[in-house]
Image (cartoon, protein in one colour):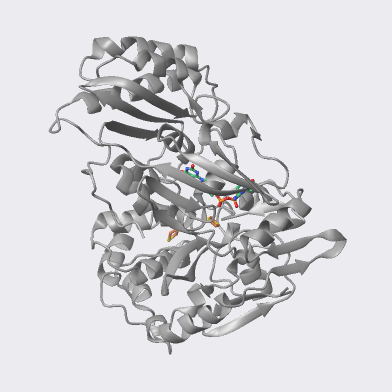
Length: 495
Ligand SMILES: Cc1cc2nc3c(=O)[nH]c(=O)nc-3n(C[C@@H](O)[C@@H](O)[C@H](O)COP(=O)(O)OP(=O)(O)OC[C@H]3O[C@@H](n4cnc5c(N)ncnc54)[C@H](O)[C@@H]3O)c2cc1C
Ligand code: FES
Ligand code: FES
């Protein structure tokens, strides 16, 4: 058992014994360390003013990801390298990304600037990225600026981030990797006790996690904290007992198997992105539009499922693909079709103390066609109003099986079972044959009106998206369109 959290900063290992379970990295930096370069804007992962870089080993390589420090708990830094805006300049010389921001007038009031700089730092260090404006705008979608305007910032990025990597971090990379490897080899479970039974725990193995979760069924499981962080910063909830999944060995494994993709519950959206894009370009595009770089770097796919939200982006698409989920309580494991996990609003098929351990996403067969579309008020970094995903099995152009799932249309992500039945026997290239399926959606769903969309809008969009999917599937290859304009197999930089 280890009773301290350990991370690397500025080439030295920081050890902390006094770690409150939900103390954020931002509060630690600003309030405890007096490092006020990292700013607090929204406190909910939206604006990026609080962005720091977190370096971790990925297959022996040091990879820096942008992270929203306002919703990241301090204990989650265990085993990682933390880089803040104060760490960048070297001997009075600005880092290349800082200098480019100055040269291109990328800052006015300056409040957002440290966050942009840290996102640019991670882009600077990213390997093999296409030097395009699209790469930059995707990378910066999680950083908002209210006064400069984005063009000078994008210009700064284009100048600074696609050159040879040469800074203090690249020069001491071998030492940093050695320090991170040494931390990785410490396989003791972390357990930091608080008053009145509280704790921050970071078990190192799946067995230890399962045992701990069973023993403390009331504890909060935390994966990437992109939901749980907001419970603390926005709902001011007290979470005295936290079990963080991020140290569990191999829980972040992801692999292609002959039939599909197998991922552990620690797999982030960012890590899963290239795998999902290889299943289908629409899925890759959906993934790219989930949150921002910062959110995708921390948020996990299984967290997006376990939270039970009716508007999570991944569940409808994964349900349409026929994904299955794996759960474990104590020593007992079970597997469920993903749709069976969602019982009702706020109610999932998960016992107290039970953890989601992984997910299996089948690949498409040659006789399958798949489409999925996300409708949100803002294109990037916004929650869906409606999400539609369709997988059909075709024989000689006729649908023999359909899996049609929606988000934002019911209290849970849900299959449109009546419309699915109506699709059987229809031909995507003959709209008259699927008119009944469009109509059947009214029997499948009675959506609500809320801040994102009215019930009438949701119904209309649900029909329109199904029609769009069928028109695209039924068209000739030349006529087929994809929302993003990506062709099959084409992926924008996903690492
Ligand atoms: C700014 C912002 C933008 C976002 N945009 C989108 C978006 O566009 N689309 C979208 O779908 N989502 C979006 N989200 C939400 C999305 O990031 C989360 O739903 C995320 O996927 C949750 O995963 P996590 O690892 O962060 O989970 P956490 O926040 O750590 O946990 C979420 C819930 O799942 C439980 N949990 C986590 N892992 C497990 C497990 N293995 N077993 C059992 N329970 C578990 C936790 O106890 C908690 O109840 C956004 C979030 C933010 C902050
Ligand atoms: S303060 Fe806005 S994302 Fe953290
Ligand atoms: S420079 Fe003022 S918010 Fe960006």
